Image (cartoon, rainbow, N blue to C red):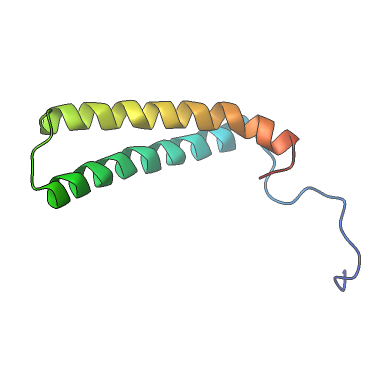
Length: 86
C-alpha cells in the first residue's frame, strides 16, 4: 500500500481492449448525435425560424454526426493513449 509519496509507473485505467475502445467510441457517437440535435433545437428556439431541412433530415444528419464522431474517436483514442493524454 502506498502512502501517496511516490508515483506509480503503472498506467491508470482499464486496458485498451478492442471491446472497451468500441464501447467508448459508441458512447462518444451518441454524445455527438445528441449534441447536434440539441444545437439544432436551440437554433430553432432562438432564431424563431425553421431550418432548411425537416425533422427527418435532422435525424439523418444526427446519425451521420454520430457515426463520424464514433469513428474518429475510435481512431484517435489509440494515438492519444500512446501519447498518454487520456
